[in-house]
Amino acid sequence: MIPIIAGAVVVLGVAGWFIFSGGSKPVVVKAPAVHAPEGDTDAPASTSTAATDSASAPAPLTVDAAPKEMETPALTSDPAMNLPDEAVAPAPDLPDPSATKERRDPILAFEKLPPMPGTEEQFEEWSGWVHTYFIEAPPPREGKAIKLEIDKLDPIDAAPAFINALIGLDMSDEIQVRDAFVLIDYWQDREGRKMHFNFLDASRMSEDDIDKRDEVAEGWAELWRKKMADPEKIATFRLEVEEALREAKSKEGG
Figure 1 (cartoon, rainbow, N blue to C red):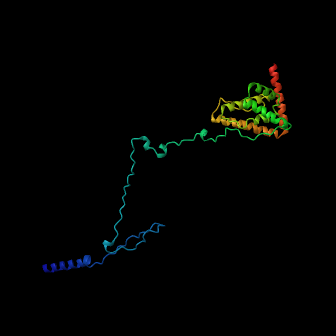
Figure 2 (tube, one colour):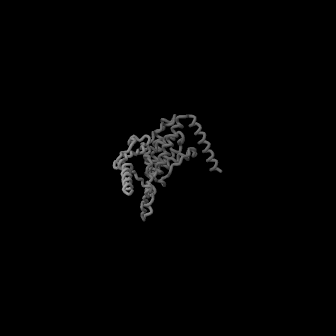
Figure 3 (cartoon, rainbow, N blue to C red):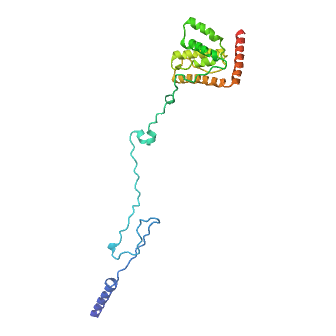
């Protein structure tokens, strides 16, 4: 019995070897299909089978699940250096409006006014008197005689002579500013201060003051030019002047 049992064990062992190892066929394992993301033309095409040899199978991908810590920039000891660039950038220097303003030419150079209608014959003589007395500063005796003639003039008829005398004066020169101020002040007294404009005296000589004197003198000429172009405006102005002078005399008498 012992030889029979031993032979049966050997037969079963050989048969088991053929069935479970040596005699089995290789098993083919299908790899899962890899699909490229939609729209990605550069992704590899999907595969349907894997190689039978384990050496040819692709190595599994590994993903680092732990996110990397964001690096925080080191702060310096200078607080200003830890602020955004725009916070520490120096403020731009704003231009000084008075420095960038376009300055006027201090020399008065407006167009000369023509004589009032009906005064053409006397106009040159009147202009000479006004310019000599107020601008040229004649000797006292001569100046007194000229002043008497000027006082007789109608301030409205002689207005162009007074205005034209300002042409060529330098509004940055104290002496010439004084002469212009005296001329304008005298004419305004003669017409009852009806035309109100403020011509600065020589006590104010900044660049803005010089520009202001230019504007007033040129504005006077332009305003009078418009009056001369409209006889009705001149007639109305005459009535206003007469009324103002009557009021001034009544106040002096009272």
